[in-house]
Image 1: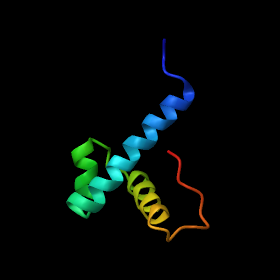
Image 2 (image 1 turned 90 degrees about the horizontal axis):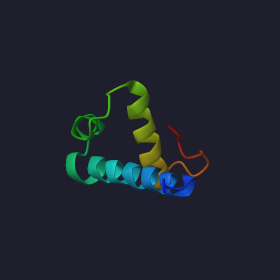
Image 3 (image 1 turned 180 degrees about the horizontal axis):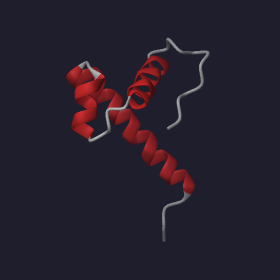
Length: 68
């Protein structure tokens, strides 16, 4: 049986959190993290990661969480 939509969303959220943790704790930079995870280094991708990092850091409290 295929995963439910909720399970798919949870899996995507966990992946995004892993990417954010890697950017914050390991490299400290979005560009090497994108290369590590095989994410295309488009400005849009980097913007999404930066906005999500600000959101989880509490700096973007008024902004919605970025969606890919």
